[in-house]
Length: 73
Image (cartoon, rainbow, N blue to C red; front, side, top):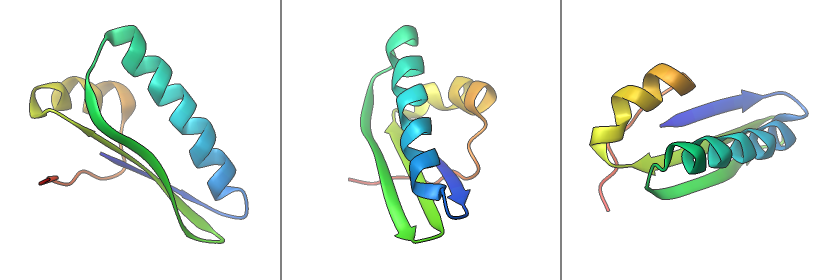
């Protein structure tokens, strides 16, 4: 799952969103493989969450990611 943030504060907003995602995942006891913030440019950042497919429907409903992508390790 991917959340996109744009604007001059994109990276700070993405870092803040990551904190909320960690809290949610801990509270719901959802295992995940990857949670990271990636700066794309000075005006765009993304937060990536990789988890098992069985968690996707609930996460998509609760957290409203902007995009989704199949992740193959």
